[in-house]
Image 1 (cartoon, rainbow, N blue to C red):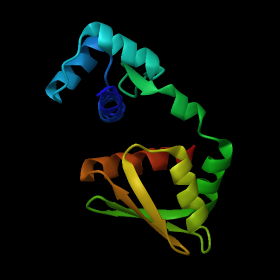
Image 2: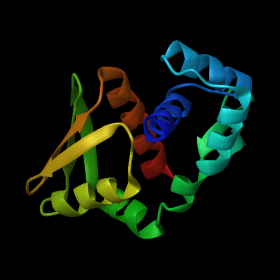
Image 3: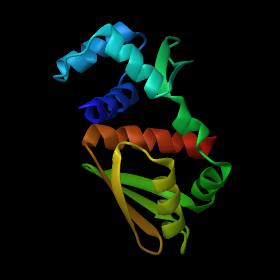
Length: 149
């Protein structure tokens, strides 16, 4: 149950600008989890969540650990190999420099986007299975930001 709840928390903070523990508890309750403020507080500590300033100016929870884990090497591979991307429902298709698809797919796997279920790479094309259409849009936005720097 705790592992499921933690996965849901990571999903929720990825989708919404959640600013407070109370707000997080409300989202979890709507998702069918019965939680107390103490449980949410403990989950935040165990997941090593941090608050950062969102584009809207509000504070929001993020999984800080995964941002630290983004090695310059993986970002460099993404930037060097990436050409374009497009979506077909919940499938993200990424075009790369010839011969770079496997390296870019491996970089995506190493970054651990929660929204991406898995990737298949050819020579210059990657197909990523994404959890939902909304998540595909979210991943595309994250990739644009990573590649732009």
